[in-house]
Length: 209
Image (cartoon, rainbow, N blue to C red; front, side, top):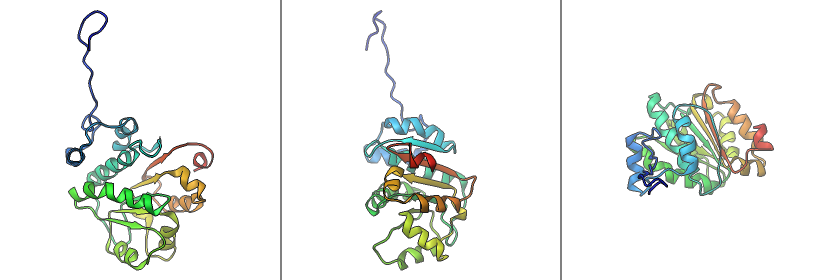
């Protein structure tokens, strides 16, 4: 590209490495053909990787899933804590079992690199496998709020060890009436934990949350 004066102007493309994503995770993305961060990823990753709380506004398809999965895995690796029975190290809340499954699919290869365990939690299926897995100790729980709160109330899950909490599609959770259980679950996580919230809008019920 030439500038009006005729001098060359070089266009630089930001990479995930430029944003601070560890090589172990950028390699996984490259294997999937993902090499250039989306705007929501470029805008949030430097802060989320540094441990700051983030409110991200982005619709489905904006790349927000990796915007929270990359820092979640990187931060857990950095912290070096060990998983304990009933006490997940990270929590991702989503409004539907379909979204929970999609997040799990995206997280699986990132978690596998660092031998992290992941468990999904949602209603409509038997709860015993969920209870058993959490009792053994998992690094990350991806859950719908209602079923997870049931496990917490019955003593099968303890949120006191959660280092990072993610709320995905928070506006959809508000529409479905999930904000009260979401708030109760957040209240059970450590106050000094990192929190990442992604939503298509950041007003009304989301603003209260």
